[in-house]
Length: 513
Image 1 (cartoon, rainbow, N blue to C red):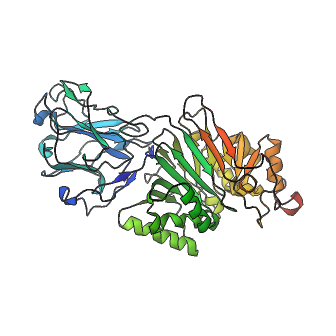
Image 2 (image 1 turned 180 degrees about the horizontal axis):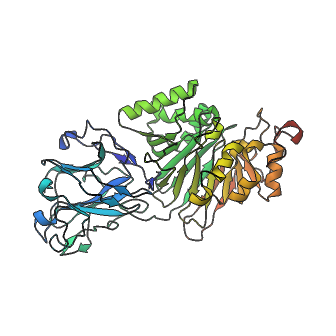
């Protein structure tokens, strides 16, 4: 089974971390791995990556010098206890000790663990004679304790004395015939070429080959979709979508204008099930658009609506053929952690945060995201769907998000379209943004933005931009240290009011706590 990975990744995306674990899609002849095709995809797929392998050592014998490296793109360490290593002509090996792959780090698994005899490699585990990597056609697979495929690679030839290494772990790594694999040139140990336990030669940044981030520009487009939310994020080659607005026709035109047809979206997040966030996302699944989605995250609540039924049917159809990984935001990394960090391949991170498990409405079950630029001191942003004061109190209290990942940001998306029930004084104090963005319809029946919310933002010295008056709002940072960020709008000024805005006498949120 071959796969394509997201760059975002949990940092579990690490994205990988986190954003964007990864998706398996068929690009490799299954004859190289005859039993992998029938296997399920592990929740750790894309988080744990076969990052490098040495099948044909030259400085030492094959019996001593064969090894492969596993890289963890996630935010949490992963134990390989009871994981299984398989290859083309071998019985396979079960890992019988608690080999821990640190977050953002590596372990080497080798036929021989002693660096004195294996050519200088420091190996965390010796798998012995149960695995022999052929110099000609062979394959290597790492499987979790349940037997599901974590990662695999196939090859048809090797080069004596040189390891093959991944350039970008967010891309397809299934066969070394792809341009994402590169022969290593650095000398290690007794004289063979490879980069065991460190970033690969040719690493292109981000999570690729264990790189630490290319510091590339990050752009956040808060799209004008009317009375709804839709955000499109790019960093390096990584692409992330959060919500899709209320109108599939409008959203389809935006996909066209952004050149996303035929592209891969590394991570899609639906903050909650309401149609003003979900409807447009159906366009991502239109066959004629040929859009690949690696991860789709939403809270998977029992919720009956025509759009959610249709959207979930489309998601599950791709899941059934191994073309998409579908996760519940209540367990965003599928490992029990409340926070899943996706690292984009330009160095930015998206922390996807578990929603309030006791939320009493879809709004109060909104997943939140914290975006961190490649230079975290230059740009951060907070988005929390339509979270209202109930969930806001949970963010600030029991969730612990003020400490991890921290809530202070440069830019805040106004919860619930600038409603007075989507903000509190304590919330603004905790976030302390320099700018606030609101997704608002030019003529909406909700009275958004509410006068009380605008008054609170004004009292805290927080100017706002709004899509009804300013159009699509673009926030960008160059990704370089000290590069700062800019906010650009198509029209209007900051802190505008709209014709539909409710006055303080028309709403019941006054006073705001």
